[in-house]
Image (spheres, helix red, strand yellow):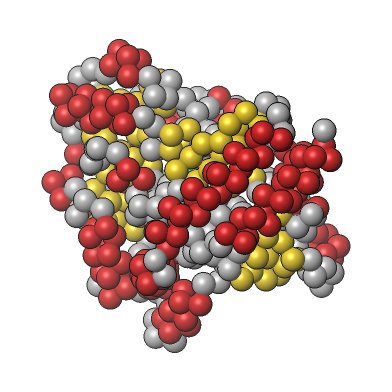
Length: 393
Ligand SMILES: Cc1ncc(COP(=O)(O)O)c(C=O)c1O
């Protein structure tokens, strides 16, 4: 099929709820994509952070082939080996809790919100979330998402959500009370513009939750599975949450989400309270196991730290040359370039020259390359951006 023919199929049969670029992607390998017209693209935002170890990592592809030949799916009436193995690997790399599997980030957050109501005392029902957050598109998670633009057209939202400014301890203290059952925040806001939580802020959440019998939920859907150079971003800070949620990079490109809770909290989720038909299916869990093994065997956490520092350094060098760059921020391979004006046009121009990056919150260029990225690829990306910025002025 030609690019035009595929686009015509979409125009006729696919709901137009995404603003799509006129490219049909037919192949992915490592940090590169190819479109149907044979163009090669250096991908610095792979799959909206899903392909965290690169496109079609051989270990994940091999695990999927092997698992597909044995058992694709078995419902949760039964036990299955891949789900058990993945749960163990995740727990050992976080705080040792127990896991519930689902298929996406929003589902993982739904599970966390429901569990928080179950696991806290009667009368506790309020959730505190932070302005600029993004937690998903289901009714509960879009309500948790404290950004009015995602609410437009969907009112009334669910009751019981309170929004406070991100990183503002005083506002958090003022919002707290007996009725709060949980605080949910991202340790680094992704869609909100790569806003890093302060250690004091996360410590204040922990303290206030403990004092008020509420739970601390960290949404690690975008930050988790090694992206920041640690398995989970909370491990950069001096806190341990009660619940973390993850998805995106967990399956190395395959749809999977998970919620991990401490043993004490997890035991409240008894049969009949929550479920997912596809959750924990063999194929997705086999991909998850292979992803974690690939990160470990490839030393990819260390690479994320090294390449993260290198990327930030190279991008900061650009700042001296291009006043449109205000500053660069982030941890590991979760990097934002704060611009002094809108960035969408820059992203489009980069793509024309074979580089895929992203712009979020209007003025933040987002670099989130795969954890296998090399210094040469970073150089190539920064050179393309440099050229685009030079021509734009
Ligand atoms: C922090 C965070 N939470 C939740 C979600 C929702 O995940 P999904 O699109 O898989 O439902 C996203 C998606 O971008 C996210 O970045």
